[in-house]
Length: 170
Ligand SMILES: [Zn+2]
Image (cartoon, rainbow, N blue to C red; front, side, top):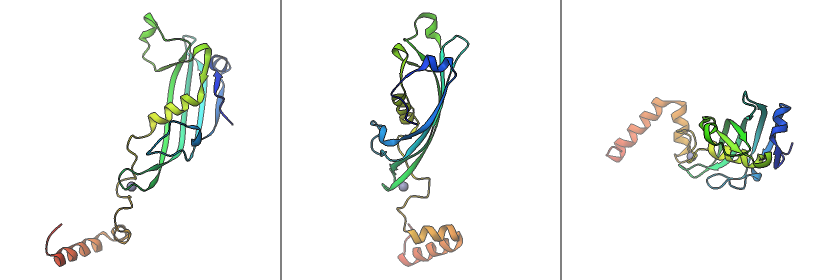
């Protein structure tokens, strides 16, 4: 489904509604280098009321986003798994209410900008510096890294040979 741009969250909370669907990364205008607007995310949102009759949203965003590894500068896929939860308030809490320790979002006139919310959660969840998992960058000669995985002793022997050959270590 397409998430609506604006959403009446209180009514959804009273009905305990759940929304889920896929969002293409192309819809996230603030997604920028080292990330690319390529990939799909699956979002699930659950609205309900808390014990103080406030709108509470629980959700999760997961999927994959294309990125450029900041170690080898080659393309990579950044996995996203971002659970989130917050209150949706009509105005900024004041006085004793302000003591709430829960995260909240203000949606004026109960008009919640769902895409903005999802984009915020995505940007918060993405690492500042995306990188391939350790040891999986493409910078090393491919044959050498393949043999390291296949037989570490053989690779070590080859390394010793090379050091002997060049006459100095490292
Ligand atoms: Zn890399």
